[in-house]
Image (cartoon, rainbow, N blue to C red; front, side):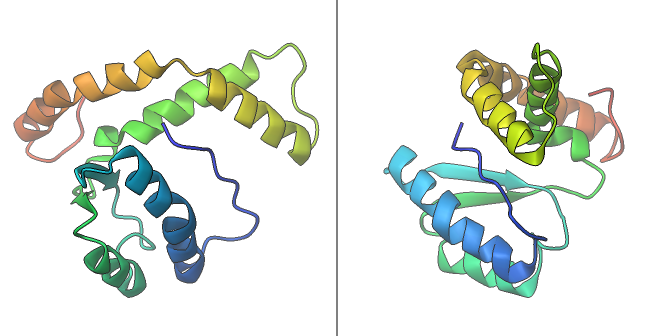
Length: 142
């Protein structure tokens, strides 16, 4: 898993491209130096905007970019990772009281998430795809 990045303001198309350029691209380049990295995201408006589409086209030789149908939110692994992160923060003995405390708790919990957690979600993808196909792109039990 890559580093956790804090958004200090509302996410706009330009800000999204800045995050992709400043955080995603260097991470993918380091982790997937063989150019076989894969990025999965949903069809959020910012993800499919003209500026984002142009950015992905420009860097398409660096990694593969997967788009998912709008009805397949249960196929996006990060949603399950966010849930695990939220549960980890809630289990802390002292709940965060300020935004700074929350950010610290999120970073700490993020670093403590077991790497096997991501692998569990990745390994479940074949079952998720079968379920999605069976549901003809509709909701699944995941």
